[in-house]
Amino acid sequence: ETGVTQSPTHLIKTRGQQVTLRCSSQSGHNTVSWYQQALGQGPQFIFQYYREEENGRGNFPPRFSGLQFPNYSSELNVNALELDDSALYLCASSRTPDGYYGYTFGSGTRLTVV
Amino acid sequence: SQQGEEDPQALSIQEGENATMNCSYKTSINNLQWYRQNSGRGLVHLILIRSNEREKHSGRLRVTLDTSKKSSSLLITASRAADTASYFCATDFPGTYKYIFGTGTRLKVLA
Image 1 (cartoon, one colour):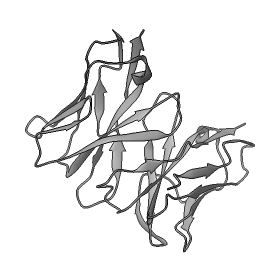
Image 2 (cartoon, rainbow over the protein chains, first blue to last red; image 1 turned 180 degrees about the vertical axis):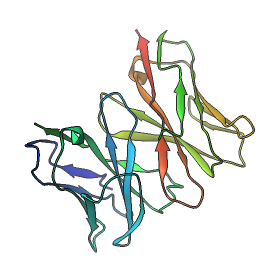
Image 3 (spheres, rainbow over the protein chains, first blue to last red; image 1 turned 120 degrees about the vertical axis):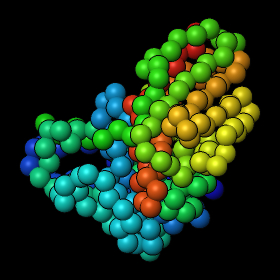
């Protein structure tokens, strides 16, 4: 079975621009969660999508938005980028929203905002 | 805000020794998970322990949970150089599907 694939792996954007990050979930998983990880910190929960609906959100502003598609792949969109948005963005898929069987993480997208 | 906090922040041991890292959290939980992360890339799920369980084993890993103290520990026995990584605990908020990660323990196993 294929794991979680994220694209792109690295990205450099200018402050104020918009960015879209993509994630293909593992086969058999219907839930996708997105996390932001700043250098030297633990991942911070952004939001979760289950069957194409947002299923929970962390303390992130509305300029962070997402989508989940019928094949359970997902996108994370960030508008009006700020320097503090520079981080590793991780996507994780799971069989159930509560992550009881664990989350399968992708390798992440390293976003640098200059 | 951080729910979980790992201790120690960094740990350096010799190959073959045991490594113990601890996690403390603030509110009640349903589940607690441990993850490993190599070199700032994706996280690998190690083990999940439910609030009604006290101990779980998986290969060289042993996890304990003490809900009265709101703490968990991860023991890696007979460590190997390949165990060098950052280890995170993640706790859920009951009623939500949000998992909160701690700041991690950086483990270095010297060959």
